Image (cartoon, protein in one colour):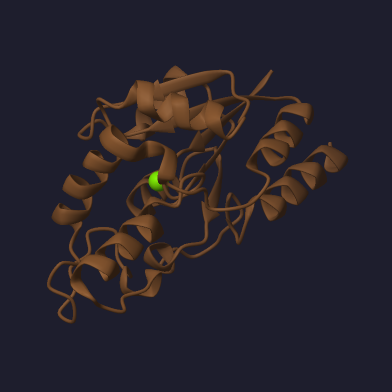
Length: 193
Ligand SMILES: [Mg+2]
């Protein structure tokens, strides 16, 4: 069975947007997702808006109120089911370590079907999974990871976010605006075979 590596935060979970909404309330500011225009971000405009604070706050959210964190799109359950129906084994992959129970609870709360859940430490790159897991396709929002996978034989889907605009497409690197676009692409692949 073909293996599909599905990133969790930034692709399924709209953790950045949720965090910004909380911070805007707390600091009475007007930041938006577009203010996060790099992976390791830091803003001159908003003092609170930086990568380190994001990581600290969002760890707290996972521990204390994971149920409130909203998804990136509606109908994730149906969309991931469609990917599975196309014949993919779906592995959910995350670099956030220590919140496996909460993250899996979030997935069941949203009725998202998957075959494996892989949680790596923050320092361990997902790149190694391409060999250990034999992934054929991955979808991710992390521009650093995407750069590392650029010259591999994987099909890499870039989930369009303000912080990965720097990524240029090539034959095996395709930008998708949402999961329906990803599904269309997978369906076309099957037709081509
Ligand atoms: Mg991500």
